[in-house]
Length: 372
Image (cartoon, rainbow, N blue to C red; front, top):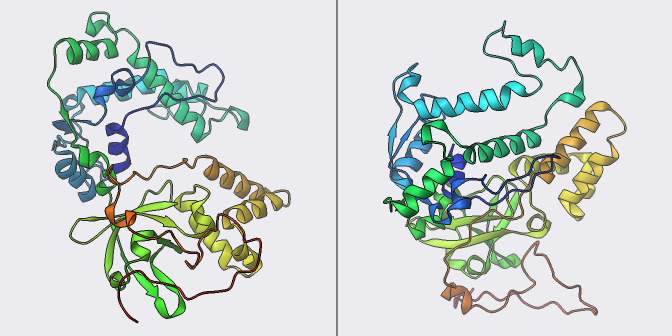
């Protein structure tokens, strides 16, 4: 639910479809595509049904405290109280869902249920990625279609009229909160660890991987302190860290090969589970994601289950975004600007270049001004 709120606030970009025949027309799209000023526009009231996900404390906190709107759950079994939402679902069902293979219908004797039966033909089934594209295309097309209730204009044209010509008053999300949408999620509390005697700088451990940045690695006084960490489940290469008082520490990057390839929580857990097994001990010495994918693909021809696991792994990896963790403050961090360049003593750090000749080891320096 919180991810849905983030998508509603952020500006939508034009999507490239992979299904043949799906093309955006000039009049189609989403509101923030046609009207860039509608990005990060907050709403005053939102109507929800009584689903547990909508009434969870995390959802209500994100809506009421972060967005600053009023939540109206409405009475049970009263669709007339939410006519626009119910109309939207009805349009999606009639224009898209009922026309797809495997449609279950509204009741067991629904004729559309029998007509949509693929009869075991797996080629007719629609994948989750294809369904996501079809949903985005249907909504964008709906916004560009004229409606009788709007006197023959499209929803986007009506919105443009009220926003740009009538000067409708809008409430935008504050600039500081636009860069910290992750604060709507539940924070994870991580303790700063560091072993200075062994040359290991301060860091945190999260989901089996070490995270740090220059500020944290050079702050030995933070060892033992607890940080509030916000995770983007779709891209674990970096996380956002805050102090208990609310001030931001910055973006922490995963160390080693984990910071190279985008991956989600599901793929991270599967790789760590495979690394812990005796048969996959070789994965610890190379790129864990690449080694895991190659092991799955190599075993795909042995059984149907192995082929399904390989296909699922490739799908998870293909759906991973390029970089989704929001950036920090727009102004450069004055603390990081005064720090020396990173040394190669960080444990599990990724070296940009391999040394061409032998390098003598030297004592790790901790730039904190303290004597140990």
